[in-house]
Length: 342
Image (cartoon, rainbow, N blue to C red; front, side):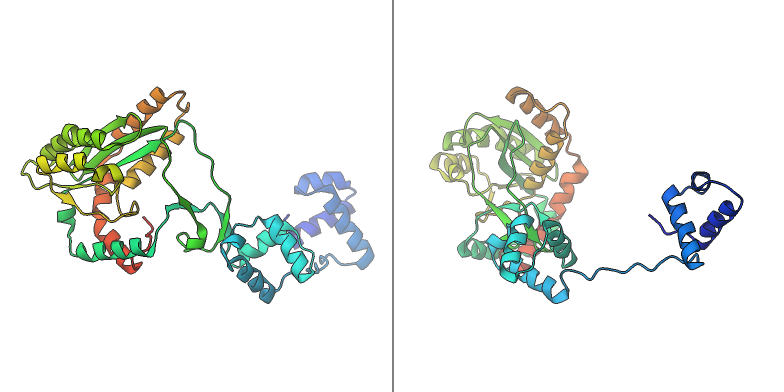
């Protein structure tokens, strides 16, 4: 509650001297009856309307203690994932200083640490980082105009029900991609998988897949969808096809389909969804489906929602993604081949 102004305190005394009740004064001035009585009581005892100075309780954790708590949280992966209750229990046991979980949260916030859902990122080795860095250097001089010649593609799984998320992780601003702050993901069996592609010229088809991807199914996608889309988007025959290094893409039957069609492909580093702009489209579509009311009641309804979401992606959105490619390449170089924030 805001403190009363000297004018309001004087009005309380004036109302009292005029014979008004505390209830009436409080109603007229828009304050509580207890507040009015406290002002009159203080006037009677001290002959002053000046409010009593509030004595502040010293903080339970001073600045050195806050930094010690921060260092404890950032010490390793496990500590970053402790809940505030467990942190309070551990702190009390080690420092012999009882502390509540709320105090822990408040002090961690003061030193820049907040509980966040860890980013889900694929596992990455030093070899992956090196391959990504070499790829980035090879494409460092690619202009926006050349990236407009690329047909980006990928598969993505859409689930009927939103998947549960892992626990929170304590991190500072800018630590989203810190190895201790991410949630490593692995591929899993799909609920319904879709293949899609797009370029500067437009969105290609969105294709539902039955079961998991095999060399045969991918060869059919190349013949039935990739080839026609390349012809439509790049009638001069200068299109470049991009896809990741998933095992079915590298099988002989899929490789033969690309070679027989004379498709020019773009080399792509493993474990690099953060470089592929179609991942942003998948994320946008999944957000659109999560916001959809009612949620999908069956896989067939989910397929309708996915198709609608794909068709609702505006040209200015996916063209902005194409324009971001030179910046993504530069970001990979700046990160020395590590994950980038795209």
